[in-house]
Image (cartoon, rainbow, N blue to C red):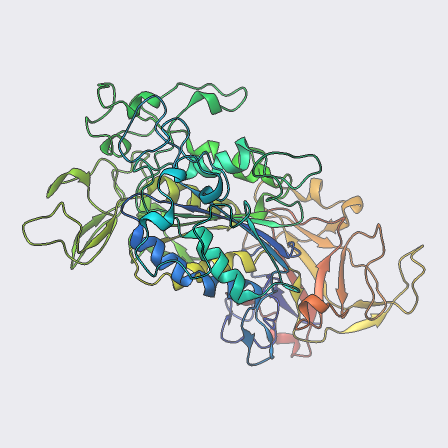
Length: 585
């Protein structure tokens, strides 16, 4: 009998039968097993969100735009919009949300630099720098923020809020939480102008111990939960200058200290200008003062960097930058989805010399490294602009706004996108950041919950699981297939103990596939302890009342990171119609 293929995406409430506005046929109807690179199902429905905020002198307007639109971002996560066709939420609502804020200020160890209040460690990646940051104590937001930018709820007490905020969908008030989040996230200006957002996040999550574990007394303790997604969002308008400080070197990894880059009198760096020292070097050369990108995400070793926070489940870490990139990003379509064209944006060469260049009404833009602006020799060509500079004063941004290329932040996002489909960037030069935040919300929503099925799947009576004590069980007539990621073979993956048997090799993806074992359940029942496989359930979930039917994996069956999961169901179509694949964006 012909069968219909549906990619399983973690889009709860997006009916696979009636999501026409997001689903399109993939290939001709006679093309079998068309696949789409989608997240694996059954991510946790809790989210830990870390916001890294650049609080240097140029970031007042960028922070204003961010905090103005944060409310809609939170709403999208905890109260996702309804699909009018199904009257169900489009996505799984987040059950609980931890939100932590850190600054990009890590000081200038060994040197005193204007605007860097605590030269040795800055705010040290400590959550809630208003409360805990040594540098922030010298320029608290109520002393630097223009009138009206902080909600009335914000006081001038640095101890008003704990290290991070927690939202519970069942008990918390959304409006109150939105205002409290702005009180925490609007750091205002006065922070170090030599920003280190990647290393600040690394300090917060890897050097410090942010895990929720008994006996953990670290200042950041309790923020990262085992049963939660981890989303990192970096907001900056300059390049990441995360400088090698060997006090924080990884164990067993060689380190050459580079903190002399902050010394104005040092002649070993690429420019006498401190800012240009973080733009004019060739990556990996003797004049490169920064930590390697592998420190933050190493595709060959997910136990390193940010993905180390989710052992065995690196796809549960999401990375996004609202940063110095063009407003109109170069895009490409692959596997049915439009994403950033990373090669065009950053270039194919390691030094970025062939990266993106373009022209806007406000002036030229560029993502190239070592591309000094001929109109302003104290900086490189901006990555984006908003408004034109005053006539005859090209180095003066007011009343215009510009951001310099954030190549390293974009490179980390690229690795997350290409390896786990979990990375994105957007331009901070946009006056409205709702679109950027919506893209970040979508990355999170794709990774939470099981796959909510809008249609009733056909079932047949079947024996219950041995020893379960259940009666009256059923199996759906559908089959779940897993197209394995590149480098994973059916011989090693498709084993009985893992709940899989070997399937036909996918001819388009050219990868091995497994057929996932199905667990029989009574209607409305739950999977018995120890069962391994997928199951189809119509069990009511009070935290997700909009989802009536769900396809899920048991806890003992973890989809391979980077695998494509799809469901294949019988259809009453004519035999010669062949299978039809739907790609849900």
